[in-house]
Image 1 (cartoon, rainbow, N blue to C red):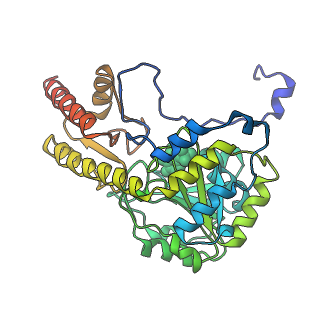
Image 2: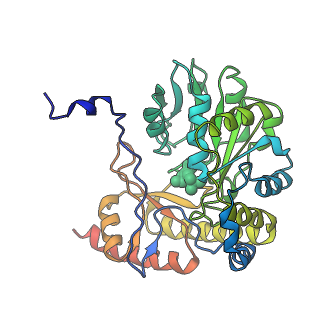
Length: 359
Ligand code: PMP
């Protein structure tokens, strides 16, 4: 018998998602949550500087029209093809509630974003994971069985591996009775978005975020692009839970960010260049990793255990991400920071490996 009091028997119990650490200490090198090392574009700062506090008296626009209008222009879709939310976590969570409502299991890879199984549990959605192959690739055939929906990130997280739009189209086409969600949180760092496929398949939902490529993780903006029908269903559920989620200032800041293509491309190119340079340096140090098209590298060393490197890096105030999970417990996920940050990381790794090899 447990010690539960009677009312506790009625509680919805969940094991929550564990986000990466947000250490309070200063002067650290933070490469553990895939944030962007560069500031948001200047337009965002101008909006905040000019903000009139009196505007806060009013409720925000429930349709986030200023933001949706800019997104529609940028991605050449109609406004009715766009849904915005408070980070892509919010968007995906609402999408789980809306589209995954079957007795059949939803499918996602065994190594993937660790929020998917949490949402499935909290909304009581049955799920089944499909193993990635030895190169961390998806086998499209795994996603052609009976299912209540499909979701995976492209590029995948935490591996950084990008699948082609052909593979995605194959999966979407083979599943006319399910909604397929492609989580493109990291697509801007060198992948081809499958967004154009929404014109061909009304069961495809593509989700993106401002947290990585637009340097706005703290502002919380995510969006989904899909057929008018899918977006209408998402809005129906959203407006049945909480209409006023995205605040007024966030809507305007988001719109400013979307307008500034030049800065967007400039910072993306910096991160891609640093990533490619870091890949070479990591290889020279004896690390192996699947090729990454994201803003992180998922690396393993065959002589020195990942957990040891993780702990030693932390002692040097360098934070990366480590999971003590089957199949990936000898890997570190390292976010791509500035050139300077990555040079400090590489020097620290050099010292740690020297020590680790001699233990
Ligand atoms: N999808 C993936 C694959 C991610 O790694 C993240 C970041 N944790 C998210 C979605 C959510 O990001 P956000 O809520 O900041 O948009």
